[in-house]
Length: 312
Image (cartoon, rainbow, N blue to C red):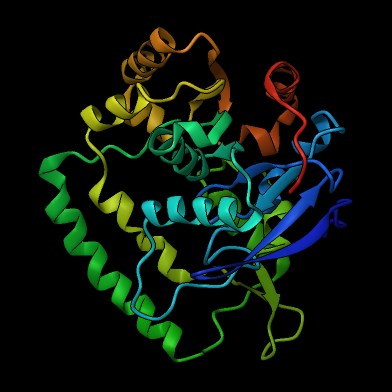
């Protein structure tokens, strides 16, 4: 197992419960709020942040149901828009006039939506694969939701039983995470996510189980999706300094194709002189498995656009 990086654990009270987070860097500097992807946690940034400028601060959060954060109550489904509410709750909690955002995967989608809804409250946005919400094809919505709703209710009922989940050896958890992400998370990188996503079994000593909320598998956002028209219309509102990375070895690249992303880059770039979009070779978890590929560009972008602001 890996040792903890030099960070400070913080807990943030929010309306939906408590958000666990890791604060990197000086405490007197307003942090860049860093948001992980679906079924990951704040450990996703453990290999990237140490390569970024050390005079900056980062607040890497665990989204609800992930990592060490609290879960939603029984009967409540997870949805991307709920996490837009969460970002605004964090901003209000710290009384910041603006936020700086870093996101990967679903975290980048959450930041995208927040930045489009509240462009005056975001002073920069770094997005790592993908860079916009899931696009739902109209003909598939009914079938997809008809499958997800019963599955969600099954997972919800299982949670209510307070039964310990199936346990495995540590090595088996690594394999499960590696295969479950389509090998996007390497076996070497998997421990950075497992550290905040597992607990030792009380029934089977020496074995472990995943601790994330199993209801997350049936995220309603993926069931419904957003239309391409909405995605591109929101893109017009991203007027803050904005850096995007689109990797060529991730599922949504294959599913949507390169042309949609080029159109997205064109729409944002035509209205934003501080926009940078990069198509790159790499897996979906490039920032975790090969952080040296993106860290130099992120560092240069932050050096150019980041402003030192007080925490409060």
